[in-house]
Length: 368
Image (cartoon, rainbow, N blue to C red; front, side):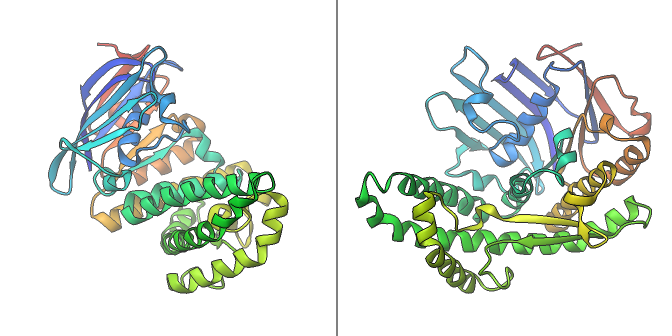
């Protein structure tokens, strides 16, 4: 997969940006707060219709403006695509592929796959479960359109149920709709668990050898999926998962009404990372957790390649400067093949990276 060109209009700090990229390595350099990350964010947005830094699309629109646009030329699956996202304050975003308006973000799946690695990801292991769920969701949404649709639906149902639980004492009639929301959440939640379990199964196969190589054979990485307690086997058929989710909902109904919170469902799932059989989050050093995080990201890249036959576009956002020389060299050796974008604060020689192109960004514009 190749991003051959991009144009940004009123996106973050870019009034207008337009250029073509190398099919190999693209180094984007400049001082901090000039727009390097924003450029990568624009590329990433076209793969998932979501931002790793913004909760709402309106945050991507430049201050003082009412709209923004991201448009890219992409070569994928043996053909050319033009992907476009139009953002407008107070209105739903619009997504297009080759001029055709898309009904859902899930339709982007498989057109442009990206693996983004930023400094915050170095804390993927140490942070709370929400960060690791976001990692899983980002990967699976790009590979499975049905998962992207189910995730959007689950989030919508979760918000509705949360409002019911919050307000039911003041408006008891709200409880009349609770059972319907519970059933739909269990149906959708079963799909999420199904896809997450199968993706983690792939991660279990791909990640340990990478980590073993990375750590010089000194450590063994293990992965474990934790989900709703009544789920005996996350790899079971979705019908079985549905029945077990309903069982959990029934047993937690009283507690949910008292707490006024949604306590049942896969919205608290976690990917547990272990090193030599013990929790990496609790016991690993900073260097060990960084190595584990890098291994997970590189593993996801390899899974994308195995699934599609094409390397995803790799976005390294100022991450090399956060790594020691040994980890830098390991990453650079593992990213042969495919298109790569690297941001950094100082101009980086392409000699150690291979064929490519450099871009100097200052105040949201290209320095010629």
